Length: 624
Image 1 (cartoon, helix red, strand yellow):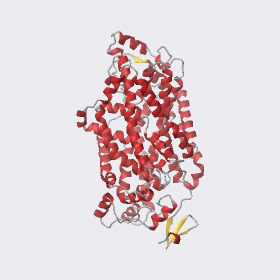
Image 2 (tube, helix red, strand yellow):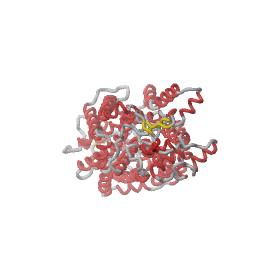
Image 3 (tube, helix red, strand yellow):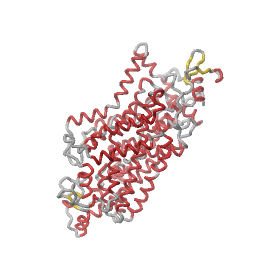
Image 4 (cartoon, one colour):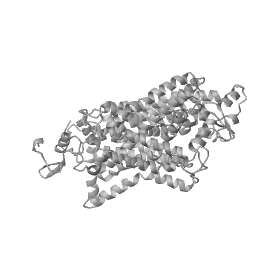
C-alpha cells in the first residue's frame, strides 16, 4: 500500500478501503528549543531536595560506602531501563502522562494515576519552598535570627552555639547540654534545645501540640507559599518555551553552590572526620535485606519514574531525537549528585560534631527537613560571613525545589489539556493559573500551626503505594500487553537503532519482579507515621492518610469501568478489545503515523512465541 494512495478526510484522519486511521493531530505540540534544554529539565526534575538531605543519611545508616553497591545496582538494572522506557513513551506518543497510556484502553487510567499523584505531591511539596524562602529572607539580617536566644519565640531551654562551644572547650559538656533536640535525632531527655532548633519549631512552624490542634493560619507561611506559586507560574507561563530558558539557571546553580559550600566545608575543623565516616564501607551490612530494600526504594523515589514528569517532558522532544544519551546522563547525574551531596552534608556534620562534643553518628541520625532547617542553619551560623553561606545554601534549595516543581506541575497541567485538547489547547495559561491557584487554596491548612503534622502525614502516605503500583502497571503494560518487541520497534522507528536484548529482559522480567517484591515488602513492613518529638497520629489521621495514598487509584478504577461500559460484546470480548491499541494510537509525527498504520505490527499466534519475541526480538519486524 503506497503512501500517496491515502486520502485525508475533512476531520484530519486518513481513510483507505473503509479503514480510518489517525494521520495528524491538529494541535501542534511545543518542542524544546534544543536538546540541552530537555536534558537540563529532566536532570533538574530528577535531582530533588531528597538527594541533598535524604541520600547521604541513608547511605551512612546502611554501611557508608558499601551502600553504594546496592544503590548503583538498582539504579543501573531497574532505574535506568524504566527511565529509558518513559522517555521514549513520551517522545513517541507526543502526549503527557494522562493520555500516553491509550495504547491499552482498559488500563489507560494509569496515566491519570500519575496526574493525581503529581497533584497530591505538589499539594504539600510547595511548603518546603515556602520554608526555604522564609529562611532566605532572614539570612539577610545583620545577625542571623537562629543564632540567638532571648527572642519572642525562644523558651527558657534555649542555648546559643557560643554556650555550647565554650562548654565543649572547657570539657564541661554533658549529654544534657547537647543542644540538638529530637528535631534532629537526639534523645528526648536532653534538657536544652539549640537556638536554630527553636527558630525552626517556634518561629517558622509555630507548631501546635498536634494535628488535633490546627490553630490559626500563619501569615508568613501563607505569603511564602503564595510567592512560591507565583514564581512557579511565571516560569511556566509559556510552557516549555519559558521553562527551557529557566532551567539553564535552576538546573546548574545547585552544582555550583554545592561545590562552593564543599570547598568551604573542607576548611572546617572536623569536616574530614565526617567525610571519612560517610565513605567508610561496612560490608557486613550488605547481608541485611533491609539495606537492599532501602537502596531499591531510594532509587525509585529519587529517579522519579511513575510520577509522570519524565513522560510529559519527553513528549516535547522532536520525534526523531536520539534521547538515549540524555537518559544516560540524567541517570548518572542522579547517582552522582546524591553521592556528591554526601560530601557536603558530612563535612558540615563532622564540623557540628566537633563543635558540640558529640559524635558524627549521633548527628547523622537525623534525616528530612530537620537537616536542612536545623542542622545546616546551625552550622553556617558558626562560619565566617554566615549570611553569605546561608544565602548560598537556601538559594541552592530553592533552585532544586523549583526544578522538581516544574516537571510535576507540567504533568498536571498538560494532562488536563491533553484530555480536552480542542477546548483547552489555546488556554494553557488559564489551565496553569487555575491549577496553581487551587493548589495554593487547598494547601492553606499546611500554613497553620498544625500544618507540619499534616505535612508529615501527606508525605508519608502520598507515594507509599501509588508510586510502586504505578511503576509495576506501567512496565507490565508496555512489556507484555502492548509488547516489549512492538515498543522496541517504535523506538527504532524514532532513532534508527535497535533495542538490545538485555534491555528487553530488564523490562519484561527484572523490573516487574523487583518492583513487585519491593511493593509487597513495603506492605508487610508498614508502620504508622509519627512526628520527631514522639507525637503519635490518631486513628482518624491514619484513615485520612490512607485516603490520600489511595486517591490516585480512583481514576484507574473509574476509567476501567467506563471503558468496559462503552465497549460491546461479552466481558471477555470487551476485555480483549480494550487490551489492544485504538486506531488513534500512533506516533505524533505525521509521516511516522502513516508508516505505523500501513505496516501494522502483528505478534505470533502462540503465547510462547509472543513471550520469546518480547524478550529476544523478532527479525521479521516490519521496520527492522
